[in-house]
Image (tube, rainbow, N blue to C red; front, top):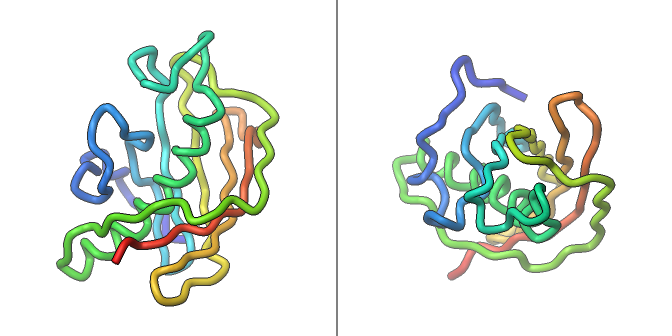
Length: 143
């Protein structure tokens, strides 16, 4: 994993999602098979409820972390970020929800990628480095 010397915070051109549906705010690390993103939980987030980021918000954060990997890879090749979607969620575990003003770190490890379909293992951590959530999902680039 290559941690970037300085986080990339201007990520809107790297993912197909647009405000208010953006669930990642920084790219922290990148390699061919790994990506690390972060998100500060704000009360303006559309998935913010009961003083925390909801389960759908966490799932979308995981998927957008994978999209950030793909988008940054395309950016390095001089191409625009492709549109994609969650193809399936094989497994998901959520043990705690991120609270207001908490910054979460999401790490994704690509297990397999073939013809626009990516199988990825994703883990979300809080600032104390406690595992908050994890999943295995397939994402698909729209044709």
